Length: 322
Image (tube, rainbow, N blue to C red; front, side, top):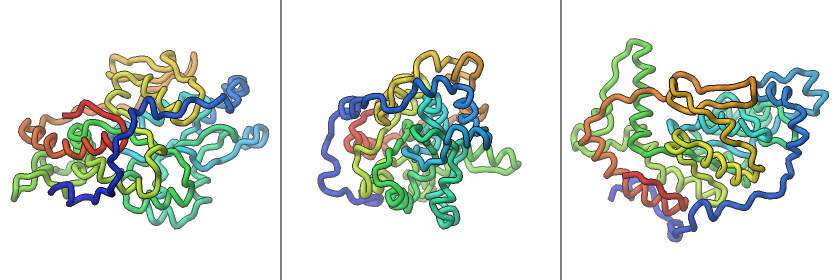
């Protein structure tokens, strides 16, 4: 009954497909001249920071390209960590800010040239990637992206749905507290006070019903154009997840364990671009979550379970979620 409230399953869309590791395309021959890039490490460093000068742009024939891959979600799934880690690859250039082109009507009305001008300068053979987690849950976005590039590659990073919902709540709570505003407890928002059932009107809950949103995207893009990233694994053991993404993007394997080191103080991995340039994510990452009533956690996990099963079946990737 609950499932019918959110989406209509199209016959045939839930046919199981092979596991993700086996359906990824084999790496293509190295087309990106990485040897050339190795001799331009200083310039690559400036590109990563978005600091290319007009002279560098002219001399090296740098261009602003529309993204060939977009991290479309999920909010609080690890989108920033994924973007920063992919930026370790010499053939990847990231848009530092969330552009919100496809989910914001005012921005979208400014046109595709406005969007392109928000992209970083890069070498023509590099891949530009942007991330805006709101894309995943915004109804108009799949059609708009399809109109720009019907063959674009789409990355979705997910976490266990209940944990993600609590993380979502925690970020909003912190914002309220900074403004000295009060906020309801998570339990009061997540459950309907009249029925004591899961409150599907609460945005943090709706966002975690991954299948509901993915079904909308599959009306425009085949499942092969999506890659699902395990956000929990990316935190604990990032390299295997990044290697899967390299294969999905048809990039030669260049990210190695050298580029990732665990920072015990922060409690998660930081990035090593080269011998002199390291980077850790902002201190706001890895917030401590408030304690949630275990009975509410169990109710949420039971609610998400059938949606999770459909998500596994559609994507071909299974997680050890309750």
